[in-house]
Amino acid sequence: MNSQSILMAKITYLSGNSESDLDTEMTSYVADNPVLAKEIQFVESFWQQPSEIVLEQPSEELDQRFYQMLDQAKVAQKSLSTADKKKQSLNVLHWLTNVLAPKPFTQFASLALVFAIGFNMNNHQIPSNNQSLDGLQKQVESLSSLVALSMINNGSTSERLTGVSYSLQTNEQNEQLNLALMKLLNNDRSSAVRLSVIDALSARTSVKAFEAELLDSIDKQIHPVVQIGLIKLLVNKGSNTSLSKLKVKSANNQLSIEAREFIDQLLAQRYI
Amino acid sequence: MTDENELMQQVKNGQLDCLAVLFERNKSHLFNFFRQMGKSKEISEDLVQETFMRVLASRSSYNSNKNFKSWLFGIARNTSIDHYRKYKKTTGYEELDESSINDEKTLTSELEKEQKLSLFDQALRSIPSELREIIVLSRYQQMRYEDIASMFSCNLNTLKSRMSLAIKKLQESYDQLNNDENKEEV
View 1 (cartoon, rainbow over the protein chains, first blue to last red):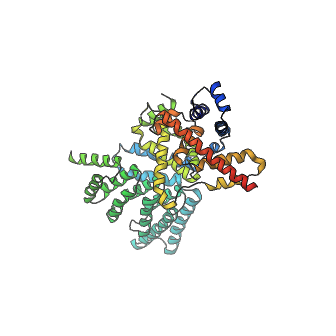
View 2: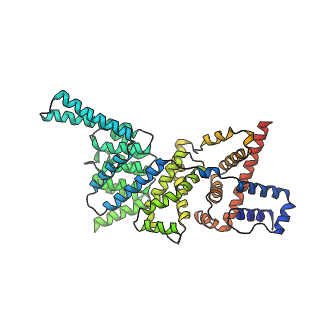
View 3: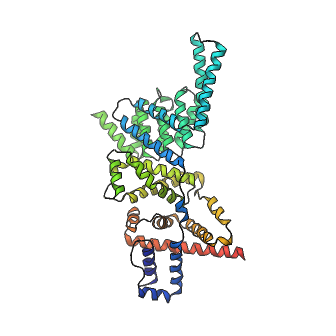
């Protein structure tokens, strides 16, 4: 028996890992050892203090974000059996638009869109030719880009997610928006936002314009799900060289184990 | 098999709704774990969300013979470590929530109990994170030694030794802070 073993026994008892407190022999040892007595007193005092911080509760935003993610996962689970994956990602993003958008901002965006359409119609009478229809389309797209950019640069995760879904209604060639999306993909602290960017890019006709950036982005991702999402995007929408570049990354251990397994499965399917 | 183990097994079998029950039961514990590890409120919420994303992503690897809580906190630890690695260069780490410390510093001598709590809190935050983790999991999350040992991949005796080392460090830090405070009062 020594001071160390007595202290250890006391902590084990106080932490609920043992039902027996110090026995008589140990108690008298403590009484004769003032340094150990002080240590025991400290341990008791620490375990008896109210654990005030434990009462702290997370905000409601956490609940919202969790249930968004869960719904997204359920949608993904259901749609795994369907062939149209593009439709699936659009559904998820449209769902996110409806649920996530902070109400005043959505109302403002909708009002602004209605205003733009009304203004255009009043000024140009009824669009009677393709030129005025194109003009109207451009104005709506431009407004959607503004809304998307404004929300993407916002501090809240839910607004960034909504901004990404707005980007679906914009011109694919909008460089400023494309840069903002790539920045989110590489730097956003939330994996849900990164995944939503991948979803938005999947809905595009092609991603060949930023294929190199997407390949580089894989190295910046910690979360295996995001890596796998990027791999799927590159294989489905990128050029034929993407898969060979991914193979090299996999061979050089630049990818997570899950991503490497995913590539192996892809390759196996191709060779079957 | 415990209730939570069964629920996680159902999640693994494809009943994703069961994850909502596990989230409701564990969100506050996880949130407070990250808070006590010195993370800000915002980062703690992000980490809880990330932890449950990982639970969902790695549900197929869940072994129902293992305690769910221990598995969950193992994932939470890894999430926290990945976050540390990712942001240490850009933010200088560690996102200690200074506001709570400063708030507590304003307490008067009439609130001696709260002052003591503040000192415990500050002392806890000043010890190395690998030792702090053990105290937080045992003292505040009330996890059994067996489960913590399994999370840290060590045996029970090693964990007990680490625990007493952690408590010694905590006491040293507490005494130091207490002395500093007494000097200031003089």
